[in-house]
Image (cartoon, rainbow, N blue to C red; front, side):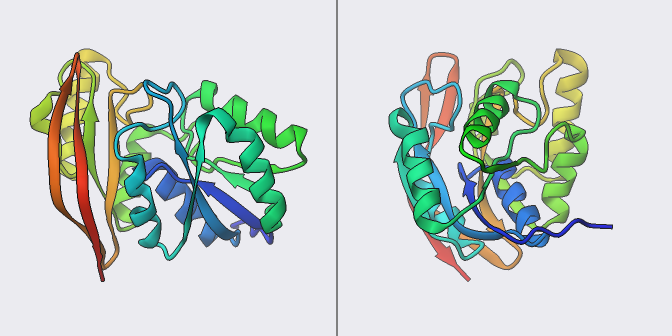
Length: 221
């Protein structure tokens, strides 16, 4: 039996696979997602995606949603103001195993009488990756910062073959295969028949981290 919600919600969409899958699940369970919120992060943010956050507005279009950008420095104040303006009573997040992220969102929601909705919380990470694929979501890797993952992985699609590679790295190096420990970050470039075509990008090395900076992208139905 699937529990059906009946309320308006805001999705915290980074543009990555986890927040996107959470949004899809929320819609399937009856939440009326009124918009996506993407956070303009501070440099080296511990809570929000940094590379390509501006591209998230195109990712939201894959599920027909508009995006509101708010700064990390005013995150809670601006999120509450937006929720009140839109009549939203739930906040959707893509947390899987990060207590750092989830507890802060839950505290905010509890203090403001909102529902914190995290459908992926404590999901087996291999199952989560396979659920992404089975849901018709097509993510690529856009940043890497863990042993075993190098710049050659930038742009790789997270498909069955990539999942197998990540499992091997987990077994040998004990990495988090969903990227919850910051091992990598993803960007959704397709959902069902809709795709985002990357037209211009640059690969950047920043210390032990490598990321793909996407400069131009367009939605193709």
